[in-house]
Image 1 (cartoon, rainbow, N blue to C red):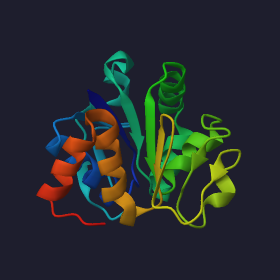
Image 2: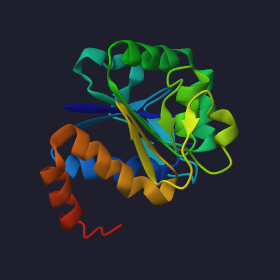
Image 3: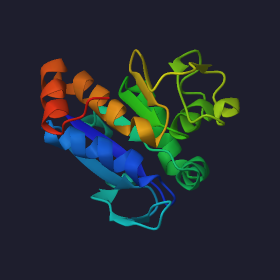
Length: 182
């Protein structure tokens, strides 16, 4: 099982790194894919070395695509044709999509989650329709779409992603190993 994480300059580091850590603890292969370059600078100036460029990712080997938030990262994603094409092909191939904070607005603005229930960062709701905003939820699952509200729900989303990919027993085991009681 493989998760592809889209990283663009300005991404929110905790929204990316916490789910990646939980997934890897649960035995999921995760690839950090730099959208524009391999060295990606987060919203708080932490430089992360991506495993590869997004253009090098074989979508057939991917089970889930994950879009972290961070307004800078989201704006880079919306401006990049390569990642928009990758996301569109992922939907056509019936892959899981996960996104957190402002990340779900990328999927919505591209028309990829029309009519799906989703949560996003409070204040970004205006960019979510025609997806259906769900208020007061940390995470929401609608079929193959998993969304998280904000950085504070990164553990919840990461564990939900893990549960979807590896089952509840593995997710519960990782939850216990990191002493997360949220």
